[in-house]
Length: 530
Image (cartoon, rainbow, N blue to C red; front, side, top):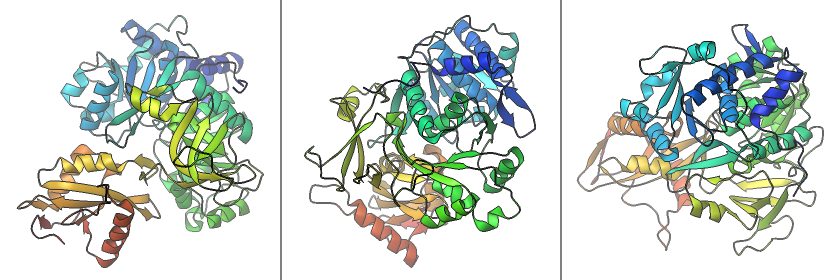
């Protein structure tokens, strides 16, 4: 086991240390010109923790939050840690159906919700939460976040322990059901310390939240990494290229983290016109490779794009490029110090250097497990190794290359979308007999989702109604943009869907115009499919 860099610290202890040693250091900066010091952030978090504790929330309890990037979200993460509770951030694009499903699964006893998003929650879903806090507005039956900060007593002492689970990040599994990935305090902190050791962030850096912090990428690279070096974090509520560039120039941002499509849009020559980005030194890139042409363009401006590979189950990062060191095109650099990596064939035997196989890691920063899914946990974590399901290879210098994503996963607008979840939602439509979805490359969105549908005989589906059906069950980024209708899905001899064949068919349907857009006011029947 590798030596710990952080001596088993917790999330809240990072902020306690910053508040004590650098109380006036600027922690958060906002677009309206206001800011908050580390001391102010920590004290507000202590009051929210005190309020939750008085409301009966304690160690091990799950607290859901539905918020975009804002100061209260970061204070909440610290407050949950102080309690020894488990924060469960929910994607703000989620539907009431999806939110209710996650709340039921994790058994949350409390929730903190942005006032503008309360309307997404039905009364039945909200009623499951015993202690409810609303941010930025007043709501009957909900406690006001600002009121609690003003009136609540701060928690007397932290209840957190390094070995405590502190975060559940939900990701869809291949069954389409929610899969809660449980992460521990010490694992998140230790993984972050290893990344910081390699990238060498410092307290003079200025970070910017391009990513949503309900996602582990944003949680780690923005919320955690900036705090661990006591740097400043500029809070951008949501990503839009021109707004992001304006903010970079205004606040002299030096560190940006995001997915390739974000940076392709931001650093396009036309988008850059009139913007000063000389303060930027590092782009942390996950979710796919940076094109060679964009990398050259960035280097001409003194900006280094550092690509990484990781999984939520690893507590974020497993391999990341080294700044200032040329990495072969297509690689994500070597694994973090102290990590072990094997590349295995289907029989579980190690393959020769340079050959492809499943990436299997050993590290003390692994997840605690999948929430209430012991069998899945055992399949993924056994013998001290984590089986990623990702196919890759390693060269003779230790550089890691990702050959394919988690099997069949679609990456749409920087979010992971598993086909089965979309398929399950579409299959709830009464006219649908069977369905399969695939991802197709798109310059701006990464991948677009294309659905193949086999209708029940005698049934007709209206595309407007189908679009409404999908929107009622799926977050916006999971919605298919185009459909094809078939008599039957292509299957292998053992009955599995031939997704590679479907990708070819989808591309051909779109090119020929046979694909149907969800915006089309057309109908398809079970007897007359295109």
